[in-house]
Amino acid sequence: MVVGTISFEFDYLPLLIVVAIGWATPMLMNMLNLKRAPTVVAEMIAGYLIGHYLFDLSATSSEHVLNFAALSGFILLMFQSGLEIDVKKIRFNLPSKEDHFHDWMKNPLISGLIIFLLTLLLSFLAALLLSNLVQIKNTWYFALIMVTTSVGIILPVLKNSGETDTLYGQMLITGSAIADILSILLFTFTAFILRHGFQWNIFLVLLLFVAFYLFYYLGVRIQRNTIFKKLIYELSHAASQIKVRGTILLILAFVVLSQQMGEEVMLLGAFLSGILLSGFINKERDLLVQKIDGIGYGFFIPIFFIMVGARFDATAISKIDGSVFTFLVLILLTLYAVKIFPALILKKQFGWRKSIAAGILLSSRLSLIIAAATIGLDLDIISEQTNAVFILMAVITCLLSPVLYNQIALRNPLQGDKTIIVGGSSTAVLLARRLKMHGKKSVIIESDSFRYREIIQKGLVAIYGNGLYREAYQKAGLKHTDHVVVLTPDNDLNLKISRFLRKEMHHEKIITKSNSQKLEEQLNYMEVKFLDVTRTLATALENHILRPTAYRALVETFENFNIEEVTMTNPNYDHVQIKEMPLHPDVSFLLFKHDDVMDLPHGNTRLHVGDTVFVFGTDSALQDTRSKLINS
Image (cartoon, rainbow, N blue to C red; front, side, top):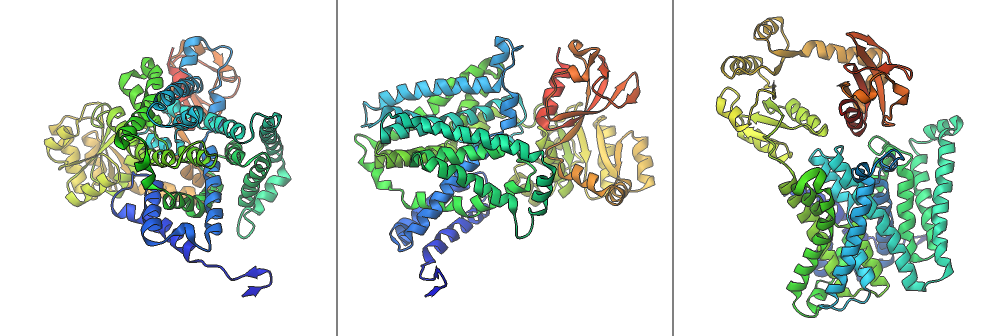
């Protein structure tokens, strides 16, 4: 049947099956408590099982539609990889003329570049050695496949461990971003030469970078245009969704331009469009990112991974010459070795343990290694067997690397400074999560076994015990420098626990909550700090009524912007004007205190050793400012 120009003669069943797999996989993983395993791995496995045992997805009348959806998912995946790269942080990490050699080695951008170059060298040498065991059609391309890494795996792992804004975390994030960018570039040029030979028109690829600059230049000008900003705001909602349309237009503009140069250049075009958008938006707060994620990860990207699984030929591995098991083990060890050895340059700064853990985490490979293998298979420079091996290695490394990293890099959560929270209420869990976002350790003491298991499943550290017994605090490793926050639902129990900690444990840093004057008097008598719940709620409601926009903005940006109190001890900035300080671009000084007098700072304000500054900004900006004001 045809209505107008639209044909209804289309079989939706294959698409229904693929979308159903994409919907059911994360649900099943959550039910089986496999939340830490990458969803895409499960999608590939599900695609393989469905495609080989239930329904032949590659031999349907609607194969061209599935191919289109899978390719679109592939393109969006490369776009998302580019979007993951924080352009502002890379720009901030560019070395300055004042930097000395030892400063360069501490620079995440320089370290990431050195690690990549060493990885590339080791990968090429490893490919030469492996070519003596199995047939490798193109040693250089084989080496490029081993160079890849996965920002999408590394970022969540570092975020869970509270390392994203530390120098160590920035080293790994920047290193993986450098590996992504340079890998894509090398793949593009290599694939172009292999397909067309070395011709002058290879330099047409540079037109993509010209387009990148032009789009960036126009974007900067447009962002400053008041009329355009008003128009974009008015059309960003409801049926228009102009930002989403503009993003899709941007992706397609780069893809179509790159497609004119060759099919192998398309991924570079999609990747560059992601980096370009990353430079204009705040990925943590912009609603546009959520909408694009919804289109990509909600529909197209799962189809790509499911179809990778459906077309995966497991029997190809058995056709490898020699011992299959020996070859797989050698490949796996090589994939780790080419990342671990270069990461040892971080040993001087972070020690053996952390540098080895960095190499292991950088060994996580997923989308790029599959992309590279797919292109290599299309170019006929890697075999079906090799393609199958690399897909298998992607699954293994992205599952194994985060586990090994957590075992090696993370210290005992009960050691060092921490906050002990007594009572596993929803407020306690929220507090623990917020402390974790700031890189602070916390331990929850919970006496209910069911609630204790729930907290553990949420990925938080918890102790099964009673806050009225000394053993619970011994298990938690309580030190006199630790804060203890008493948050059980029962106010009387909170008072008893606070009294026990003060009188029996002789602990001083205790915080609890209060909702009555009588309770406050008893807590004051014991010198226990408390939060007046009634007054706090009234203040929050007052802010909602009197200053709703400012209050909502402050609350909603909590995860991205914070206020910190820093006392300056660095003599290098004594009597220096604020405008002359090399401050992070994402930080602002709200107040400063000099000789117990509070004042508003401005560019000409001179700070002195001993002054206290109230700083507002992102976590990484606060860390950078803290290190400059405190370190001498």
